[in-house]
Image 1 (cartoon, rainbow, N blue to C red):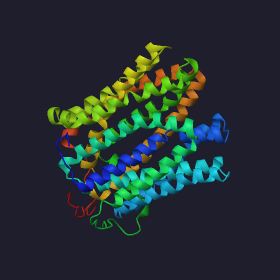
Image 2: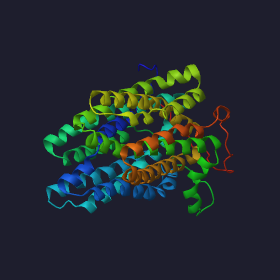
Image 3: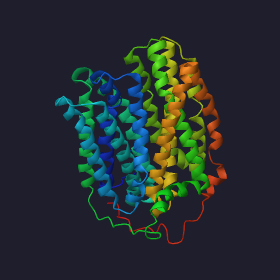
Length: 424
């Protein structure tokens, strides 16, 4: 590998599985709204509900699945969640072929896929911590981050071309197949995985549900990172539909120009992820996290200046490139810090709580900013989000907190690590 680390055959299968499902999901980016509009002739309210309700209900459904994942072998859970997504997504082209596709089915599928994604990510993070030695976690997370941005860079343009030639349902089928291939890849990892021992008092299901939130909120550094991440991601994602309205509607950019403005900057995410380990080796993890975390909040306010024509395209590309590069550096460092400072017996519940909080935050802020844009216009709402983002570095942990990893000690008997399979 160019980054100088070979993490073994088993990690190779995990990475390949992640890659194929990431490319499938990126290929189908925006497919559900297109199916709703082009096939079911849904209106704006239904399309908005499809996105918001799917995320919100999916996150709520995933809440009790965090404790369920914690005390089960992680690899079978990941395979099961991939197969659930395959079956749910594949029902869309099947129903379309039979002439039975309806809006309610799209809504149900979006909920199931959202819940399965959160559960898969929780199990995957816990499994990665067992599969990869602590010294290699940043390398592994950087590779996942690189794959994510590469998929985002090439997936939507290819998906758009496929939709134009074959129709919107075909990319949903491709996404479904990608999850089936991912399940097969995870199964090929092999090796023994001991069943985690259940900790805590018998029947303490309510405590299990809250344990992930306790793990985050009782750890001063994780708590600040969690709140910062919710606000930053929520404000960035809340402006995405408003940018579409502004750029495609009021400023008159063509769809291919819009796609170009958001595809090209993904190169920055790939570069940032590749640089993350080197930057940490040179400047230290706490310095890189604080600097990249602060810088990623400085770019979106520049979108307030976007104008029609080539200057507008250049401005959006520059702003997005800066934002995505900072995110590419910050995200794997954050993911590694979170795994390093989460008790081994609470990883799945903590990651599940983190994903649920982030998803609900995005849904809530998207709804609020939609109302704000209705009242003051999309450009003013984008400016408001950019100005608020400038204040989010105040939520980042202090440098001394990152050095010490301040936390509240786990409960007696909790988080007893189980034997980890060795990397080949």
